[in-house]
Image 1 (cartoon, rainbow, N blue to C red):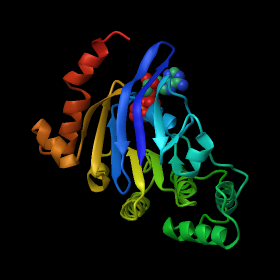
Image 2: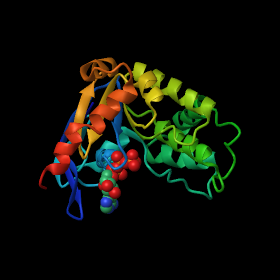
Image 3: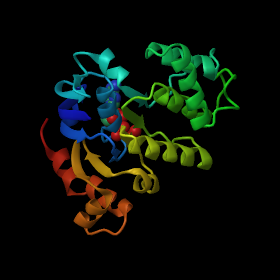
Length: 249
Ligand SMILES: Nc1ncnc2c1ncn2[C@@H]1O[C@H](COP(=O)(O)OP(=O)(O)OP(=O)(O)O)[C@@H](O)[C@H]1O
């Protein structure tokens, strides 16, 4: 479980997160939606320990991320807003390095590498250096890095960006399987069809705070809409955002 409590963050006097709170239970996929600049990446960077909040707290599996980021990172698989590949390493070498940093050795290491290679169909890329990889190829490797140590929690910032149709489908199937085995998953997205297919629950952010938090169908019903896109537009660009913008810092 991931607990986010009263997060607050500002950049240069601009309040980007305003008392943001939510809980991500085990065995559930949560979609984090919001307009450009709503604060999704900032929130996810704080959850993964890459950025410090000005106030508030994040616990991953009971561990306070700000107090013990390394322990928290062992429980997390992360795809951030940048892929962060090492271009001189082959895919195999890169994934082995990260798996070793997560404590995997010997047979366990080999099995984990083999599993992720098969799961994300990385055979053709496996021995290639990542220098020059296409956007979709880079994303596949980044996803493999997030999965290789079988974390209990996955934090994915727009994980299907750049993926072709088959790769995106493969990823969705993988995420559903991981969810069913108890993994807690949160992903940000602007693709409503993908959200509907994957998400057990949808969080909608506007101007740094939550303006929607429910199962997809319940969220739609609450807004009187019959599709998720209209629901999102009503929540993310509706009165709630006007009110937030009008508030003093
Ligand atoms: N390091 C930073 N310095 C200054 N401003 C920042 C920084 N990081 C984010 N911001 C600002 O904070 C706001 C929220 O950004 P964030 O990247 O969290 O949005 P987002 O919801 O992920 O948007 P998108 O959908 O475009 O990816 C934006 O206005 C952005 O310009």
